[in-house]
Amino acid sequence: PPPEQMWKEDSAHGLTAPIGEGPHGRPVLLNLGDYPPHALIGGPSGTGKTNLIFAWIGALAARYSPAELEFYLLDFKEGVSFARFAQGRRDPSWLPHMRLVGINVNTDREFGLALLRFLAEELRRRADAAKKHEVTKLAELRAVDPAGHWPRIVAVVDEFQALLAGRDVVAREAADLLEDLARRGRSQGIHLVLASQDVRGIEALWGRPALVAQFTLRIALPKALRILAERNDAAQALPKYHAVVNAESGMTEGNQVARIPSASDWETWSELQHRLWRMRPADAAPARLFDGDAVPRLTAAPDFRALTPPAGDAPHRGPVALLGEIIDVQARSAALRLPRAPGRNLAVIGTRVDEACAVLDSAARSLARQHRPGTARYSIACLDPDADPVARALYEDLADDAAWYDEETVPELMAETAETLGRPGTPTIPHYLFLFAVDAAAGALSASTGGRSGLDRLRRILHDGPERRIHVLAWWRGVARMRADLGGPAARTDQIGAWVALDVQGGELGSSLYPGTGGPDWYPRPWRGLFFDRAVHRTGQVIIPYGPFR
Image (tube, rainbow, N blue to C red):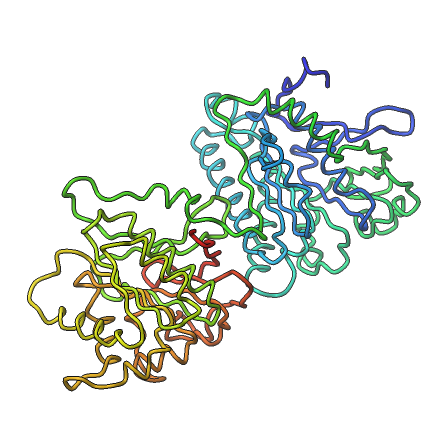
């Protein structure tokens, strides 16, 4: 629309926008509302799927204000086309309606699941509000609660079959959530747009006819297969830059052919986005951009920035160690609380040096942020030369509150700390032991002094230390190595209250470290870990370790 007509439409009863021109020059409209509630887009690579999504989002964003419409966008194919919707280094603008952009998430299916969980919670919130006001639809809720924030939500998932691939817990839960959102989302203004290059192999979707039936709006690009009804082959003869728009579940009588304008080139899109960005509300926040190929920084984490020492002489109710970023819609840190309670120790397990060091480094720096100088002790034992740069930088930054140990002196650390446990009373300040590749010192710790070995003392520290404000945060280079240090294959592991698994298969973690049998459903992948805290988790959380601090 002309600039003076932008953001003039009301979304209470639905969303309408032109996607292109029909054969006689008339606009072809796409509608989302009670009917049709959701859309499927299909077309082989190179037929203009990305351009169509840009055109549709642009048409909607020009007509409806951010108070009327919000977008959530995930792209499971490799590429950064959709990063333009969010603020970037090259272009500070963002689409004001966009709340989330996820790119390069093809190996992070958990992020897609996180979005579906978020939408399910939003659906529950809206349904509760509607019930409270004794209404059933979004238009009615907006009428009785005009002060509420009830925009329509459009969630676009490109190459959605990646989320549903396989027969694991992620695919099963994602399919269940999709079906519930597709069935109940229409009445509360939550609309799904699923796009794919090839839907023939999507067993998790086409095996659920009740789910497919909710996607009555079908958009087929040239040569698209199985988007339209079985005997509707209108897409096979389409010329380039065209699409079949069908709001009748793909039945032939619903066909409309539209010529799609060029919308995704940099100049065209940038002009529109900058115009809308300049119109944004004063309190508008940029969309969250999640890039699966990017490594998050601890200093940029909101949870890290919020950490401060307790005010005055107020007691610490349990400092928090931040271990990495959770794969979630919101930028949140995986947090391990360390109160005076049994088992509040951390094990990092795996052979990937950089990732293990990153987890321990983030934990130490986040803890130090909560203690004023002189109010906590940090013992740093570096037992693997490859970990030395990170451990040494941490030791230097913690300054006078830190002590350095190596393979020769780590037995002294165990003896001194274990001796502290035998004294009456509770230490006045907390003591954190950061052990980098502790299993590398098994030989030195096996030697006995005073009738006890260093490993005996380590086990006592793990068992009794947390209640005396002494916590161990240690990296072991394998589950078997950790068990050996704890006393052998049959040793109890309840003194390890939390762990982060790196390149460790789920089956290795077993029932002693994880509830149930067989271990967690986890497969290792680069720069990802599985975090589990016995005190708070039912299942593990996939996390992304923070990048180097310096």
